[in-house]
Length: 338
Image 1: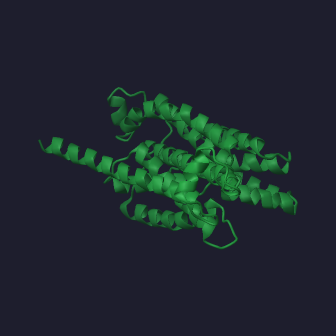
Image 2: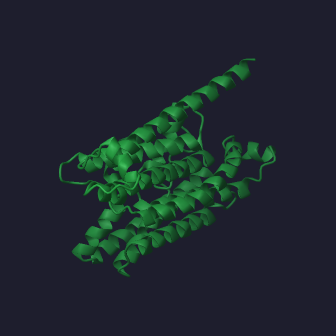
């Protein structure tokens, strides 16, 4: 009876948190479209969606604000799920794509495409996607000796992050001022270049990846108990970890390809979701937390300084850096392992 009552409370809490976060996402999505430097009334918004042409407003809503909000929501959800997969699988809150080198792999590949080959637009996104996948596979292969233990994979990833950062720094010293400024905008993570083509590609990728992730979620719950326990329950540990790694990397890669390496979304979403759920992990809640952070940060960045649109990554980086320091200090005190 006690166990059953506790389970019911846990389910109720999960549903309540998910409902509140979904409501917050809906409100922030609406705020992103209706408010800001150019405001749109609710009746005008629905008239625009119905096909009516309102001079100025129709173009701004349909070609700027709406695709930007859609990409912000999808990018936040993808990063949130990706970070939660890595942190839960490796049982370490530091194990997120932006800490263990995957986002740096995407960044280095994109910078090579921009500086060396003069690429732009979709080509840069494809380069980032390929770079993230290649670096992730290299990290996995180098850390899987005797099983890809949490701290081994993280340390190898941090090493790759340093190497990729060195590549970016070197290329920046070789780039002209105009190219360097283009690179910096991309590296900060920005929704300023959002459009429907990019939103369609991201949505199509998530339509494939999210069902795959949902199938693998059961294995993630087993791995959360520890590799030995999971193996004792009949779980194929290495195959499960490889599948989850591919799903997590792909989610981070497509999000990075769409908006650049938006700092700390993957890192923040999982721990915040756990705190809200009383210590339990949930990929769905992590996705909602990620979407809330990106939509809120983008609105703040676009409207905080009049006449200046700050990249969303600048705002999330400002939030994430203190959280990382706090996590390192508290993890040190309690001696958490991975």
